Image (cartoon, rainbow, N blue to C red; front, side, top):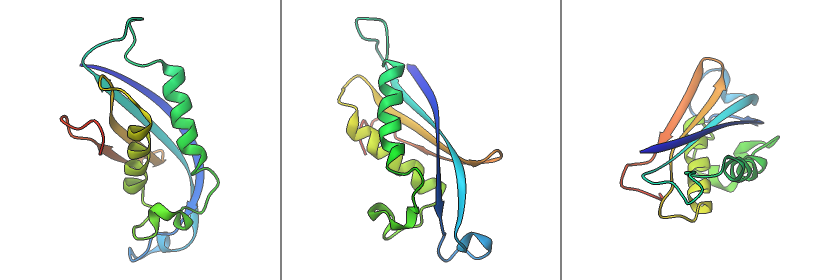
Length: 129
């Protein structure tokens, strides 16, 4: 199994409903995002995926989140814009973008601080969620 991982970042604000404490107040994070794609084989150039493409696709997804109040996004209308749900949103967005039977998004990690992260990992038998 081959894996390729990139790191990107974005800034956004949110409130977390019904969790108690300070997180129910509007606050922001400088999120760091790790995206890992995986596959069993390489392309003709010896790559799983070109880093430039994966960075571009990820940047396009994060641009929709950057400097936003995440609670105002349709995706979070019925759920908290938690780091866990952000990881799932990024995963699903990228899974829809990658048009390949050879490569799948395997893991998205969202760091909301230096010492707190959430991970969404797709099942081994799933290419898209």
